[in-house]
Length: 369
Image 1: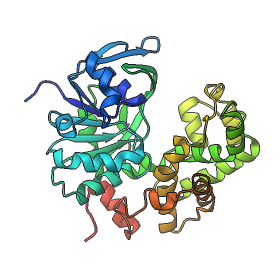
Image 2: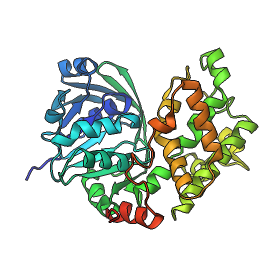
Image 3: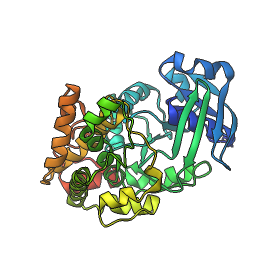
């Protein structure tokens, strides 16, 4: 029995570098994996990552146990695998990891967006992975962080409470207990349907970007995204999208937080409507818009957030015309079919399930038939 938990962090972007360095500074043996060797060459050469942080936050040189682009090597010692990549890459990570996973390992998607754990488990199953692995997803990334150089990262903040859920939910307690020494901030997220349908990025990011498309392209994003970009008319669109999301959740027996409730909970920002509440959030002032429409607010949040929520709505009889409109506009802008490329019910392994069958699957892990 080892006295320390061995972590592997998959992904060396903004969040992955911050997480790997922080875990190392907390004293955990950490392996960092990235599929592109050039992206981690400096970290490998130095043996770790320099971490800067907010006042009172973690800082110093996080020495890593291993830095690799070989998934078999990355997973060999891992007890907990923290996947910190864009959610559009979850399926590829699952396919690459499937032959190398072993019984007892925990895989956490940071975050899962909508349907992340469902898709990840479906890919493992399709790849013939028979290891008894627990897959979980966080509702959001625990860090606000940036990569500040080839072997440097900065943490601007660490969230105080982040819901997390395993698939099935009967394993969530085990995941929380395993993560607690490093991350006591993780709390019980009930189920992966709850974490996925409380995905606020699905509401705020794609529509706000698309409805400001002309301004983004003409200014290179040189305006305040949440302040100047959220006019009363734009806010009304966000409210309708939010209402559709909450209604989809209700059709599945889930009480999802509204955008107004989330703003109050996360930032203590209130208002008579979404327009007022957003403008009453001081943290939004100064945040610039994306510099281009080729941005994760569309390329990630449409296929991995809006598409699965809208697909659930269509399957269970909820009108999602506003979501469908935003998805269609994204398809036109990027000349692609996000409906086909996104997280469909088939890709999540839940097509044809009734509400009771889906609930039983996410709660107990029992597939129909």
